[in-house]
Image 1: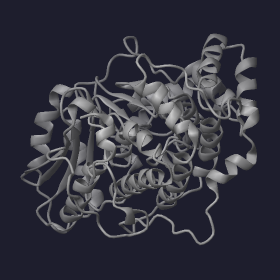
Image 2: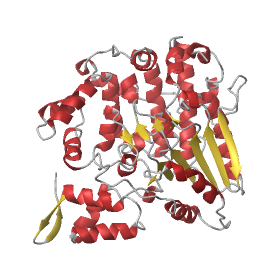
Image 3: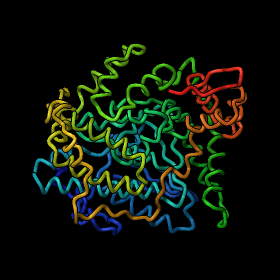
Length: 473
């Protein structure tokens, strides 16, 4: 279907009232048929994004189908868990259908409002998944970017495979890493979230596990059998959600074929590179980050390559994204989506979004975008402030569930964080080998725990006559 035809099709548009109404959305006349497939296998309910030719990119039609079904299953005693996957063998979801949004914005204020309504719809869906009262599993099998990250990152179980390609590429198109990026990116180890947000760096396969994006790494060949096994699990009515999650976690571990060896696939965001990322991306202004990269000597080649990458991005996107990373650390999951809705509305009115999408996604071959303004110096603090101001009297996004939190309640299923490792080192001072085994045992010998803990200890500790000590930066 031609892109322009899709813009005027109600399958893409969100209802005009979606920006303020808390009502559960329903399908609209003209919504695409079969763009989402639903299935029931014993106690498992599956959501399969079914636009493989578009890499399962998310549009309003899909969101309007998924949300009512999620609400229905949440009340059902027969539905034990939810599985989200993508049709075909290339992608879970490559993002939102931003090409249609950009063309829509060219219609002026009305089109910009309709685009903003779509983001309100998408963020309600993401928030519903983030606060869902039943276990959710997401198969990040293939390309998982932008909107696809929103459908996976907030689930307790996020399965990476050898085909996973994760990225938040929004600064390349004059936008910002949304779909909850304000929440999960600043909470990754050190400055890795800031780095991923600004540069759009990709993480392939097992790297998504090491970085804290995925909770598990499995070979794609086992997903079908694991799905069948999970569907057969029976939970007593009185079993609380944490216990149900523990049972599922143990079941998934049974299907592991192990991780690629570190010789074959070393941890990417590790060692001297990771130290350089923390050194260069710790600042609160883009000008300071550029200066730090330009002055970097230990990882000079990486720093110069990163400078070139950042120099091609929208200066407005870079400054807004950096502010987002710093403020988002303090936002709850609900506040995150309310704030991102306001930021998205501002970007729909900004020329960089239309220009970025056309340059990178619609031009053949892709071209360098012409940003307005063109330099960091021209993007004032007042301009950035406007993206974060909430106009007086304006209705804020109303979400569809009451759950809220400051940290993911199920983060124990990911690899241990650097902060957790630091805490043990500071409290114990024991030998590195003992700390590694302590974490391995506590995490039930989960794949990747030993590798992650060993890398952190090698980079951030030193042996002294008083025992292992954490290196201050």
